[in-house]
Amino acid sequence: MNKEEYVSLIDGRDEETARYLFSLARKRREEYYGSKVFIRGLIEFTNYCKNDCYYCGIRKSNRNASRYRLSDEDIISCCEEGYSLGFRTFVLQGGEDPYFTDERMCRIVSEIKKSYGDCAVTLSIGERSRESYQKLFDAGADRFLLRHETADFCHYSMLHPENLSAENRQLCLKNLKDIGYQVGTGFMVGSPFQTTENLADDMLFLSSLKPSMVGIGPFIPHKDTPFADKHSGTLELTLFMLGLIRLALPYALIPSTTALGTISPIGRELGLKAGANVVMPNLSPPSVRKKYMLYDNKICTGEESAQCLECLKKRVENAGCQIVVDRGDVYKP
Ligand code: 5AD
Ligand code: FES
Image 1 (tube, rainbow, N blue to C red):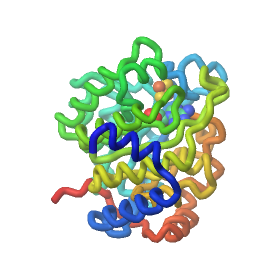
Image 2: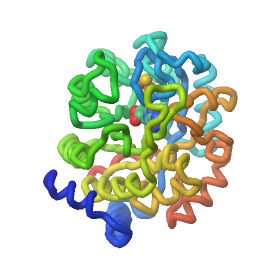
Image 3: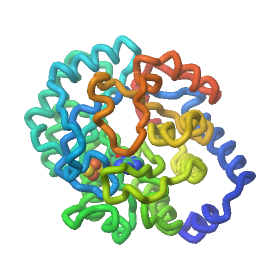
Image 4: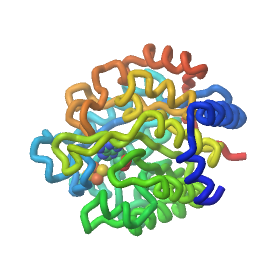
């Protein structure tokens, strides 16, 4: 599909086309992954961040954020608990925190891989040099998540301060892919100033990058950011984009994200029904969960957490799928 086709599809959407899109999306997902849903244990290990993205609750200028870092031991014990719950992928996610040098990160990654050799380690730690990405890969990291946020350079500059660029972001993604990571990218739906053309460009960007994973979620304002008064993205448009992504990249691993679960109590079930096939429950220690607040009202009551896998299983079954104990690598023919 070209840009104009995406624009008219997105602008012309209605309930009926959405229903049809989701049924096609489910069918495509099934061809590659059956009714399996893969689970990832999310460990939010630091909320220190040197960046100042206008949308993000843990941006460095937010003096109200109460900052924390997990120790190596804390992180390993999250993995230990996660492993016994059935998780075979651990996602280490954090702000861009210079405390976590290559040396520290490599040590943590290799320690996890030593103890849990049958598990995948995913990093979500932002922009670093190619050399740094290479070292982390050599230490055993399997996957890397780095959302492109918006493919349009001009839109990117409206969401970020001047020291951050879409160009460098996309260079990082290229480097990660070249090194051999399974790469995940993605964007926010309904972020401030976003146009339908931007979303069409995001689709074209995904089609050319061909990432293994794509994470999208609605933009949700955070009260202590410059975007406090902006509107949230909608559930409806986020689900529609999810369906389109499944058709464009039928082999992709697509999470039904926490942000979807935050704007609607059944958001994550609806995400699965629109073509998603991954959920990422929180494995972070309960004491820090409220501190990793990227946006207002982020769900962290316990029900979405890894410890409540039973509730999650029921939700996934309500969406016609089953959770599996599996690394859940990307489909390779
Ligand atoms: N609303 C929704 N998503 C957000 N993220 C950051 N801030 C927000 C927000 N206010 C997303 C970004 C980032 C990911 C970790 O969380 O896309 O890449
Ligand atoms: Fe950039 Fe949090 S400060 S995403």
